Length: 115
Image 1: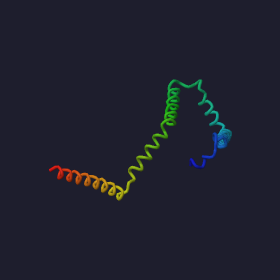
Image 2 (image 1 turned 135 degrees about the vertical axis):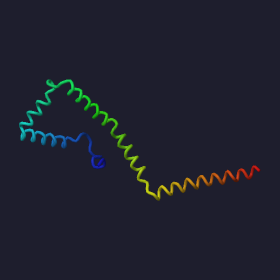
Image 3 (image 1 turned 180 degrees about the horizontal axis):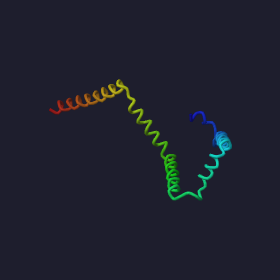
Image 4 (image 1 turned 30 degrees about the vertical axis):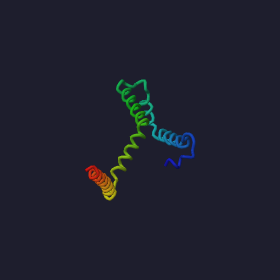
């Protein structure tokens, strides 16, 4: 998906305007819900609990924007780690065994030379 937008510079203004047009159309079609939305968005009537929830939501969103890519990379790396097939795991163990065996043989040869 990144390759599709790689040539574009700037913000996605067309998509933003389309979303704004759809929202305004829905608010015009459903006028009762529009007035309820306007009264809910009136910050002069918010209680302390609502303010706390609003600030907590903003904090969570900002933390998600800041740490989201790193967490996603961690999950992808963890996913790749668990997707090792049985044959790959056997090959890895065989190579480790061969390295240990070669080290053991070199140690034995060195002991024979010393005695």
